[in-house]
Length: 243
Image (cartoon, rainbow, N blue to C red; front, side, top):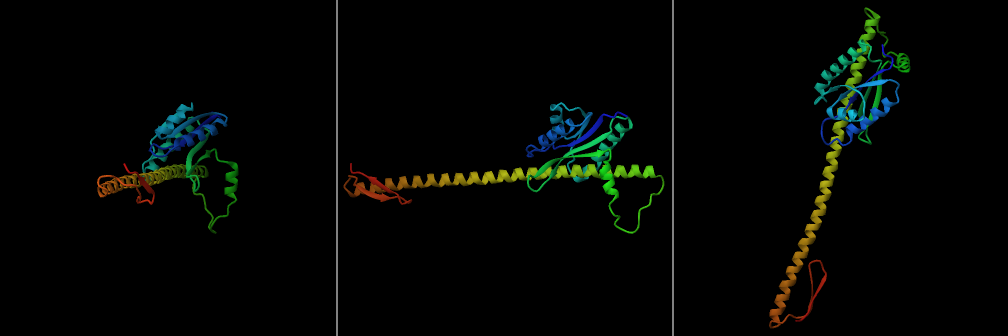
């Protein structure tokens, strides 16, 4: 088996209104994989993140379509597991990494990297020290190696499913935040335009009132405009001189 081979799965988005969603996860994957020893082979989930990884010069192993619903996550995870298992069977991969955006309360989302394989010794030891929740201890039926492989497959499936689901949740949160910002900008623009409209409308009314009053005074003075002071609707004083 090639001891330097590394496989990675990067989850992106092909939808609009997500801002720097693909750039953030692609840059994080590039920096993380650049610190590892070995040649990475990357599966991209999404054409846009695939293009960004390609522009970064990272070797790509394949492209998967971003699921458009929760029900489409399971078939995607199955395809990824089949590809990963095939490469491990040919000795092409020792490590398997996941990169995706995870929802957060403050910054909407943040990039996350997770190594799935090989199993971390510290993680395995900590897991083994956890107390069993009931008094009925589990028993292994059949071959222990087969059971272990089945548990590892379930672990990979759950990890990939969670990564994809959290990536989709981050994508939707990013789109919602962008729409909220756009809605706020529209409200602010409408408020500013309304202020300009009312100011121009008031100015037009003041001019018309001034013309009417000037004409009335001119008629009252025998055709000669008089001198006086009038106030417009805003309270400002207006002067007009005798001809």
